[in-house]
Image (cartoon, rainbow, N blue to C red; front, side, top):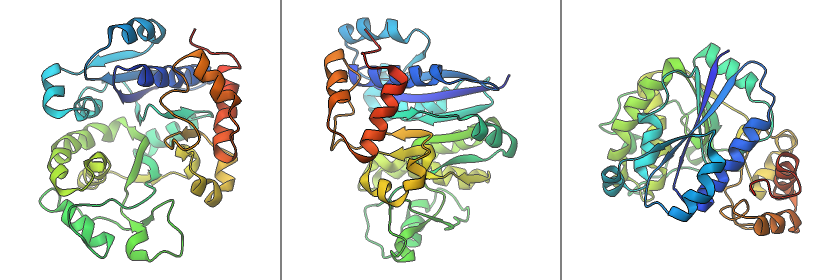
Length: 310
């Protein structure tokens, strides 16, 4: 049976531990017919003894990888994020890089089959354009500046940002294969070549971008292009954000979500909902609507009406 390794970067805090516990629970609740999953979490930063004592026993099925303190001191949260690519298991047939605030609620195996067979990196195109420390009129000029000296690969502007209106000017809307990093699928055949390039490129992007938090997404685009691997833009259902714009633009996708990405914090605090029984109950009782309500209903279907991590 082929193996899929789910790779998650996190910090050793109750918020992240609880999100990982929910992700692991959701994956274990799936009926896996053809694939065998494993969850690998990459952690760095100051440890809290109380948080470790509370949560690590509940995560005994999860493979924990601890970043060196010296690496974290030098690179901050990027240390464990880069470890996703530096220290992935060597026996997986497909890897899925997932944010801690994602929740699979439906079958992933058809996509895993296709990714493994085609050898394509797959994911949902990013919501909006990236930015750097210079002003340019077009995405092409922006990406040319970002890629300068890092790759000579031709970037294919065949994709459109997923939360931009279809009538937005093409010079702003069209993009290369620039993914939202919440959920990205890698076939074994392409992973190492992309990972090596990613690790070389990402640190060199930090000074070029106004918000270096997105340097990972940009580095992934350039690494994939430089490696020359094939790509597959997945529909929104495979990384559906709890965003009212997504709800309005993709009602059919919302009706068939495979993975929720609960990154928005307008209706609830994503860092608190799975931390303890009180806040879990408050989340279940909250007057939510639209995609937030759909997400809450999916959580309840997986974890039940009472707190699952007592």
